[in-house]
Length: 325
Image (tube, rainbow, N blue to C red; front, side, top):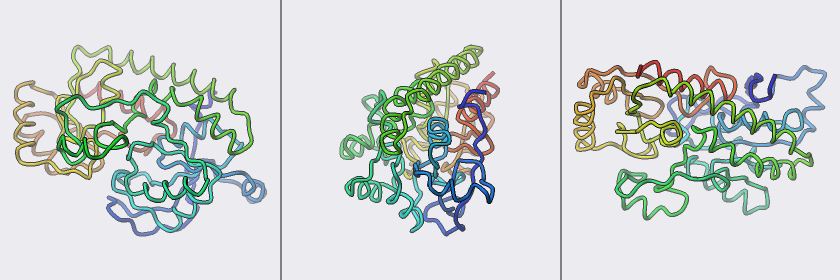
């Protein structure tokens, strides 16, 4: 079985703690490796630790490193990564890691300070966005707080650059060789062979999703926030509106934004409004109801009940196609 399709069962390694700005209680960092038996615990404890900020990215990192390292995820599933604030255990896990893997475009907003401090202290931090073709907003699109001014003020890693790069396997595949080199150097293992396998699996996943979306006569998307740009660009869809017209859920939609979205839905006659973590549920439900559209919950930021990156993206693609078909 290909590495990217193998199971990766999360294991909580510390008690739950209260979170800030999260939709569910904050959890301690979790391991993406299967739970160890008592006879292997000591051996696993001697492995180097690779810390990854969120579960979707951690799944790919786990496939890359295999049994050569422990992979620890910081942001718990069910928690809005745009709003997550780290606990003391999170900070300890990040600052003592052999290497840290992050998105790199301000996606993990609450972790930025500790990531910057960690990198400054000499711990390698691999920013995925530094190694892929980043999707920028077109002129006239919104920034982090719903304004063009915010996009201009936030600089290279915020606002005008879309951080949701994992929603295109072709985009994520661009970072795999450099990721393998960086992690391999940090843990003392040659990961070039694993990198080639992971890229092959991502190419196959990309082709499978393309075939699914190609069955649609038209693919117009209305989303919770502006999160499906990479997916839409890759597979010939168009994002025509969002409940929160911003790249982050920490922004808020104005009455004008909602009125414009209602008009867009009326004009295009969309079949579904896709919502998810961080989107005000009552607002999304009302917008969909007013347009006579189906409200569909879409998981875009965390593995959830899926166990691999491939399962996660295929579930997302099938949900989209079923709702729009």
